Length: 246
Image 1: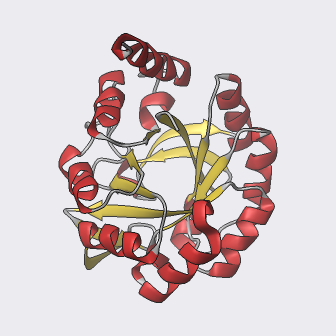
Image 2: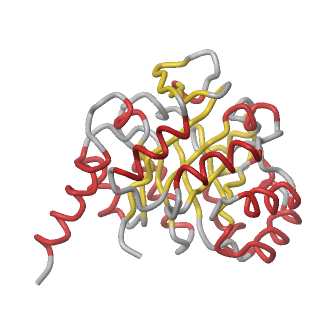
Image 3: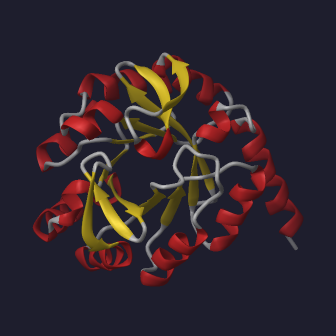
């Protein structure tokens, strides 16, 4: 699969927002209705949507109705969802509700859960490696564990997980540029397909992430703040790819 730019739809209390460093009290952007955002991104040519239920992330109880709403608005465009998915049953319910993939973070710290989820869901599972200073952040990024990000990546590979998403929580929502050291540490730890998130601010950031070896990137605040559009992001990727063709 060619490199994918995933537009981010982060939902808090029913509306799209961007948070600085994932902190609930630090809303930096208000973006209105999430279903309308999904339809807009589809119109701009989105190949995959990325939705995080922030209320679910903080409470551990994601909204399946939200999944259904966004999946319906997305139509034929697949939807990747996350935020509070901590049981096999809830992951399964989200897939039935219309998600193509479900991201798990906190639950992935359990080896038993990881092995079962990887076996049960295959391509429908993404493990979110949310890292702060190299350590894994849990429960909506409100707790910091002693688990090393690269060690979790290796455990995922051993368990049969097929895809990872790595986020630098200190950079998320701040337009400070990606944490390439973190990205490289995960790429060095495992050969699993990797999506990068956190800090993307420019089209050059997107191209650098692609060139690092990732299969995709989450673009959130850069799109929502008008740094570039999804259409421009995809054109930049396509143009570079065409220039590099023999």
